[in-house]
Image (cartoon, rainbow, N blue to C red; front, top):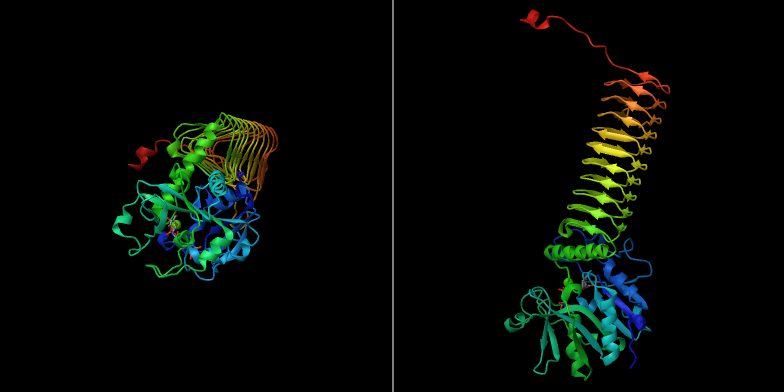
Length: 460
Ligand code: UD1
Ligand code: CA
C-alpha cells in the first residue's frame, strides 16, 4: 500500500470545552503560548500537514473568529457533553473525507510531522482507528491505555474525575495523547453507539475504541518515541510546562539559524519573532510580538522588546522597547524606555534613564542621560545634554519640538513645545526654552546667578 499523509483527511480540532481546571475567565484554548493562543498551533500544524480541511469544534459562547488562521472552518457543539459529542458536532463538516484526524485545541506542541506520522501509520495498516500514545513519568490527568494480554489496546481508562479508572489502571504510565486517525464512516457509526454512563456523565471519544474492536476492526496504538509533542494543557501548571517546552523549541530553532543565545532558560522568544544571524541574545531577554531583529545585533542582558524593529549591529542593553525602531548600529540603554513611535536613525544613541516617545532621533544624534523626548524630531549629529526634557503637553494638547542638526543643548534644558531649535544652535544649562532659537545661536533662558555676600554670618 502506498504511504499516504494527511491530504485525504479532514482534521477536527476540539475546542468546545470550558477548561474549568484553568480557573480562568478566559477560554482555555485562548491562553497564549509563546505569544499565540494555544488553539492556533494544532490548526497550523494540520494545515502544514496538508489536511484537506480543518474544522474547529467550538462552543456557542466563543467561535474564535478573531484568532483562527485563514482557511480554518468551525462547527458548533451546542453543549459540552464530552469529546465524543464534540466530534459528532463536526460530522457534517467531514463529509467527503476518507479519514478524520482528531486533535485537541489544548495540545499546542503538536507539529505537522506528528500528524503525518499518524496518517502514515493509518494508511500502512488500514486500521479503523490509530490512537497516539506516550509513556509519561507523571501520567496524572491523562486517560490511561489499557492493553490486553496480547498487547492490543482494549480501552482508555479516563481519570479526570474518580470513578472511571481502577487503582491498577491508574498505575499505567502509557497515556492517550488525544490525537487520533479514524476511518471516517466507521468513526461516526461507532460514535452513535457511545454512551455517557461514566463518572462524568459525558460522551468520551475514546469509547469508540472497544466498539470498533468488538466489530472486528483494527485499532492500533501508535506509541510516540517521545511525549514532547502531545502534552496537553488542563491547568496552569500544564500551561507553565508547555510554555517552557515551546520556548525551548523556539530558542533552539534560532540557535540553528545562527543566533547566539547566552542563557536559553532566561531568554523568552515568542513564535512570531524574527532574528538575524550573528545576533547575540544576552540573559533575561524577552522578545515579543512582531519584533524583528536584523543581523549582528546585541540584545540584553535584561531587555524586553515588543513589536519593534532592530536593525543590524544595534545594541539594546537593560531596556524596554515597544513599537520602536532602532537603526543600524544604534545604541540603546542601559535603562532606556522606547515607546511607540520612537525611531532611532543609524548610529544614534539613547542612553541611561532616557524615555523616547513618538520621536525621531536623527543619524548619529545622542540623548545620553536622564531625558524625556516626546513628540520631537532631533536632527543629525545633535547632542542633547543630560536631563534635556521636551515639555510636549500643555494640559490639553501634545505639541512637537523640532531640533535641527548639530544642536548642543546644555544640561537641564527644558524645551516647551511647540518650539524649534535651529541647526547648529546651543542652549545654556538650565534653560527653559519657550521661543524658537535661530540656527547657530545660543539661547540662555534662566535667572542670572546672584551672590549675597556674608549671608551665613548675617543669618546667625
Ligand atoms: C482527553 C481524553 C484523555 C486524554 C487527554 C489527552 C477524553 C474523554 N479523554 O482528556 O483520554 O488522555 O484528552 O490530552 O477524550 N472538548 C470539547 N467538547 C467537550 C469536551 C471537550 O470540544 O464537550 C474539547 C476541549 O476543549 C479540549 C479537548 O476537547 O480541547 C479535550 O478535552 P479535555 O476536557 O481537556 O479532555 P481531557 O480530560 O484532557
Ligand atoms: Ca485536555
